[in-house]
Image (cartoon, rainbow, N blue to C red; front, top):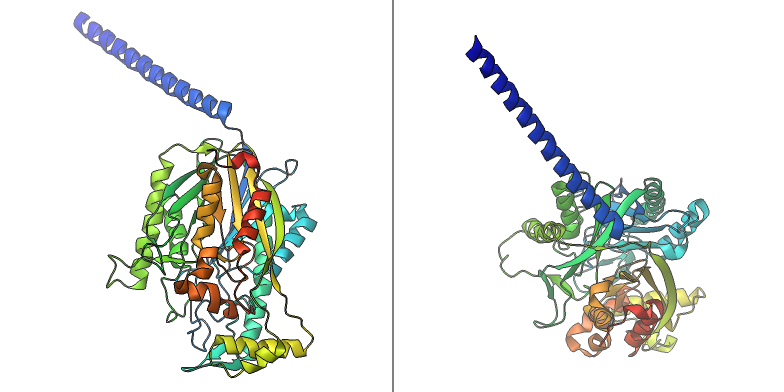
Length: 483
């Protein structure tokens, strides 16, 4: 019996030894975890953050926006649902901020102002602390007077025959519903706020290509803002890339968020429970490259571009982020951008037989003048900046902004601490730079597109300096590039 007793004793001692080693390992892991948490807490302050998502796909058929070659018909279904997503930052005592991204061609200024008014009344949110950025998908619903293409285009000319009354009603009802949903998603994000860690970094994706010049300027940066809970679990990712969402062309007649919408879907698939918000930067003169994708269908190309974005997000998540310890402080400045020339009535009458969109604009403008409207000599243009302490200045530019602006902002301010969103708060027209206004190959962005947007002429030279002067007024000098 003695050998058996000794065997049991040895076994018992071995078990006790293993248990001790196990608990020692647990203690080591706990201590490491505690040390990591302390490291975060010592250098990274918590900010209240909340997210929310709402489906904004029209519940009834609405004409798609973005291409003048659209047929007369309304949308014939949905390929990829459209969403509005909101990220709220900061508590009420600090002054909360809300960024909303929308899978739409743009956002009308009147909608932004109405949502801001409602949120101010119901939540106390200051208008400067609300920003709405559109993805510029060309497979989203028409939004009324955002783009002046509410007419039928024949094979040879622009017709004065407006779309049908029913189609106009469907657009009006959708814009009304959209406004309600943007208010709802913003309030839900505010209600969902919890203690979080917010940080950001920048990456790079190369599929955007200047669509006018082979060696033309383009912004390939991909800034990424990360929100995690107090345990380090991902809650939200807000990103930006400067490129047109035009992979699906005018032959498509179904709702789809293009590569921007697919990128969000893929990121959320890769990270269950995470809300991905995607804005667009100064990519008005950039399209997704077709190089290496010849023979691929539009949907296959969308998958390719979206995967590029999602892969870069995954890579960045494995790198170091810059902590953001301050809630954003928002400022807005409204400026006037002068047009090159406001035509006289006599000049307009002389152009009424023009068969292009320019002639259509003049005929419509004469009708408006007859009803008492005065054509403004300038465009009222909002610029917004959020500053997160000294760590980040986030710029929101309205309109279809060419790449020169973001590249210049990143030259004149610290490129490691600045982020530029376009298509934000309003999309009144293309915002051409000094270079674009002089470049013949930019004739669409600088000239003819203005008539699509119901503007009397191209911008006057000098608008770039007016915009940049306002940007310098809004961004604190501590963000300037040091030489």
